[in-house]
Length: 232
Image (cartoon, rainbow, N blue to C red):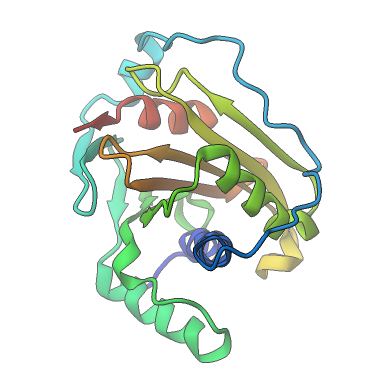
């Protein structure tokens, strides 16, 4: 099975984000002072401090959904009907191709899931999930470091949200739009949203990255998928 272009875009995005995290973590481990310029956006705490109940619209989106159980951390979430999971062998080959041209850390053992909405062909939305060690970083530290990596892309929105997890614990959200020419799409803009959770052990970040054509993404569906998550 060939990876759809939108899925490849999501995979490329999460590779970039994990590189940023790895650089930050190595500097911290070596006790090197990291002088980080002020990010272009603040990281506000969400004004709504309690989880939003799952409503009728969410129930409709997740009708006939398939449960995915995480392998590298204690979590699960629901994939809506029509979403397909990419064979790990496919994205293993993709990562190997990337490593031929770019120096990156070994990422194969970080990925838990790569999936896409198979109902929309080449315009499909995709989702990648990775689990990486925190190395003592908090959500704000992680997001600040990643915003610096992504700064050349342009406008970035970031916030801490307390409404996605049923237990009200915080999640970090980073959103940005990539010009189509940067990802090989001359007539498209790619909207990417990364959501970062800390697992219940406190040891890992669970990083979920959605990507799709900016004019067609359905953030309501993305949010429903995120709110379906359970943590063990």
